[in-house]
Image 1: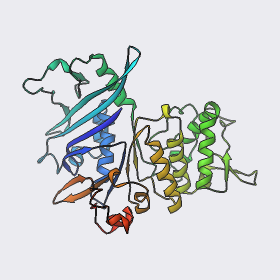
Image 2 (image 1 turned 45 degrees about the vertical axis):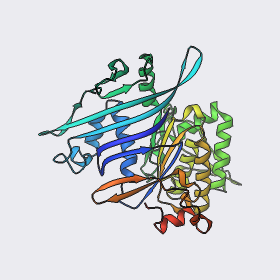
Image 3 (image 1 turned 90 degrees about the vertical axis):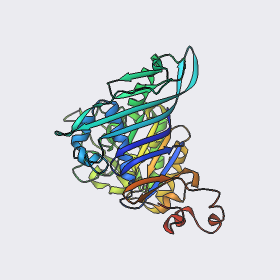
Image 4 (image 1 turned 180 degrees about the horizontal axis):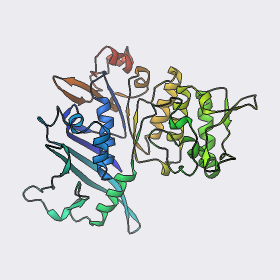
Length: 369
């Protein structure tokens, strides 16, 4: 699955946006411009598809915090996705264009999520092409498409959008503490089950595990390997133990720096087997805590992963931006009272790029953002 276009209305600082997405999308912008709102939008999307929008709204401060300038000005959040989906039917793979429509309404006085307004097909539109799930998600199929494919697309939306915030690396964060050994199917959004995932990869996907370890050694030259095993006193728990080159001393996750932990989580996400990663990866500030040379390595890994996965990253790093092309970039600006998105014109930047890097042009505000 790939998201070709993304439409957002009424969400936080985004009054109205229509964004074309490629296989690799690098989102840049000033503090407060709305980058984080775009990232959190994908959390809302996943929650609403999973019928968990009430929980998401309550967790994020209620409708007043989510609606564009509050409920007096905005009554609903609307989501529109244009998708390309590969569906295997009758032994062959078909590429199908479909769209998804969601509308979350907020009504006073309690300001809770009330319902999705039913999708109303425009005049002349064939209603048989519309498939509804959970009264919140309308999937519009191409003409003549089997309606069972709507169920497949809905399943893909549930399974194939992953949003990752490897930000909390405090001493009491899940990523540093012992976790449940069976929580190992897919890396969680905060990396909290990192030890369990790495343990399973070592036991079942040895080649990918070795690739992860070899990549981590490029970030952390003194790193030798992980020492992963269920706790002898409680076999249901596992912790991210590791060893240093030339020593048999056992280190724990509390002896890794914040940047090292984030680098390990990123590497595990990006270097894991392709069929174990979501089809769409949204990663918030992957450069946090990384040395500039490590940023270059992360960017190269992101770029290589984007050949079979769609990637959206939000970054504040000129060094990270230097590793990508102008056509990969989405600039976020604040105009008057709202967030706007645009892509820089690569052709108009050709002369500039003979003398300046893309990151330098961002700092000079040549490309916006």
